[in-house]
Length: 238
Image 1: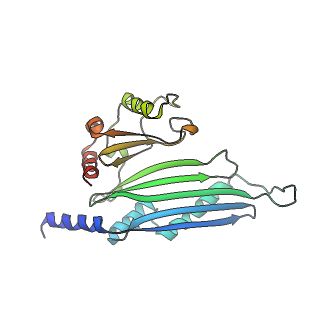
Image 2 (image 1 turned 30 degrees about the vertical axis):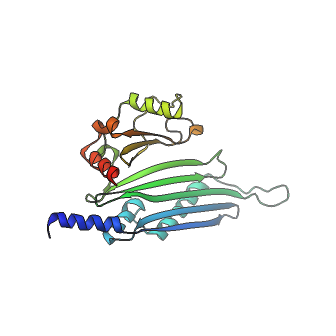
């Protein structure tokens, strides 16, 4: 079979595969005084098997949906109870119940025969904290290389001045927590633009939330690697 035909078949196979998902909502009582609430939404492709297995390996720590759900439950509870939650008796004689929450969403936002992009949104609250914490991350899988691409494999450093100008213009802020804006916490390629994200506390106070800016090809093109240019062009054509 000619090489170009093999590529076409693979492309059609990936693009035409349905996205399968599973949602979990449940609570778990721990030590009779701590309720943990969980909500997880997970996605994968319904084949080919080698691709779905690769997603399990790279995104879900080598686990299927149910195994990942159990892994997250155990890890979040263990990480939380290390803070020690002694039994506290309310005025009415009942025990005070602590509440902690974990909400995570993994969604496929782009896919073809070369790349799959996963968007990960995470919100959690541990009992006793002043507030919950939110973050967003993107994982770009290189299918032929069978790995998640590092930021440096997609683009070179963007000048600080360019980033600060765009952040200040969009968010109307200038009280940065650090002098170096580079690197962002995560990046995404979406409809022909590169999106840059800094999560809470990364460069600005918590109240400012997640900071993001978009740079079009004209502004960012010279800083992209060959892989980055290819991916940007693919998202632009979809």
